[in-house]
Length: 125
Image 1: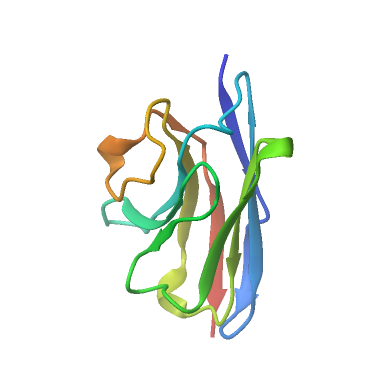
Image 2: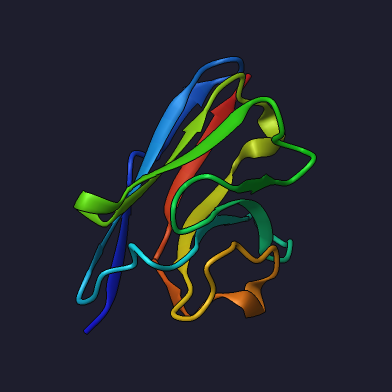
């Protein structure tokens, strides 16, 4: 059974940083793209960042570009999201996602096959 388990969320002041981790189990995703999405209350799930299977290609939503960095450790079957200069509008549940077929990351929900339960990130003023 495939599982993606996120960790690292929490409460942080605006301008602060958090590092999210997503550990996969049940199969290896070292040959597949992975990504991060977020969903704020009353809003649809939105793409945040995606990374190719080698880690050489990454995509970011315009709203986080320059502040967030996605990375991965294939030996540990884990993907990370370093979030700096956090803003109030970054408050959301952050979920990691993995595809079973794609080498390069998709920017839509439909591009991923496996999802974690999510970790809450709350940015306060």
